[in-house]
Length: 335
Ligand SMILES: Nc1ncnc2c1ncn2[C@@H]1O[C@H](COP(=O)(O)OP(=O)(O)OP(=O)(O)O)[C@@H](O)[C@H]1O
Ligand SMILES: [Mg+2]
Image (tube, rainbow, N blue to C red):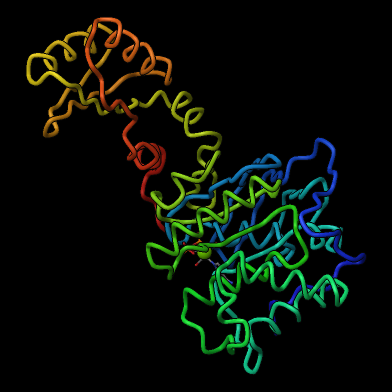
């Protein structure tokens, strides 16, 4: 099985026990270069994933997401540059890195003749987890990914979405501090995507750091604290969506709904305009407008509306926010 990682030097800690990494970030990449012939798959890439939270690596097909992730999980040797995972170098300290990293690749290997529970047990054993702990862990992991009912089913006969779930469970068998998930939502139905998001948030609450890639923005929007926008082998912007927006000085789009019909909406338009709103448009019963600067500007408009007695029932940043950020940062280069 080609994607079995070597067993770590020491047994994994007890379930859900985070290791102490001091102040080290989960991932720190500087000037990473990986070429294939003349193609720069990754080109002077810098990335900072702090410990804790969910970090989304967003970029179009061929941007370099998988290549970057492979360098993090010790499966690719860069041409140059440095990668650190909780302070360890994936090239020279492979075992240390593998002990703390769980990787869910963007494909599912072939594992004929293994049931779901045997599959997880196999990988947990490969990581040196003792038999008794394994039994409990396999049961807990099957429950986490809602596959308990398939415990004795052959993994090779699972649907694609179910294989994705098993792949995620497998990435967790040694209780890694950093989870690297390459396009985990691909092949999942809408309900399974929502469940995946819940699982990621739960893992983050438990103290795991999650690094997740996708080329579908809406998939990451609701679960990432921070994002890195990658294109043509470079990270063009990274940080919280708010930080990126402030840095780029892109506009914030707000949708507003008020009680009181046309008159109230007209009053709201005037107040919003007085507080810097531009590009006002009617979208059905709602008003949409743009605001320059940070979320503070939005808070000021809302305070002014409420202060003037406008009965606001909905006031929210447009959910296309990340999409707009992405479009404003990237240029559409495909290699
Ligand atoms: N083993 C390889 N040999 C040759 N070229 C490669 C190899 N791996 C990646 N590349 C090239 O490097 C570039 C980056 O690929 P990568 O798989 O990292 O992109 P990605 O962002 O993961 O894309 P996708 O969204 O399609 O998964 C692409 O142009 C790809 O064709
Ligand atoms: Mg990829």
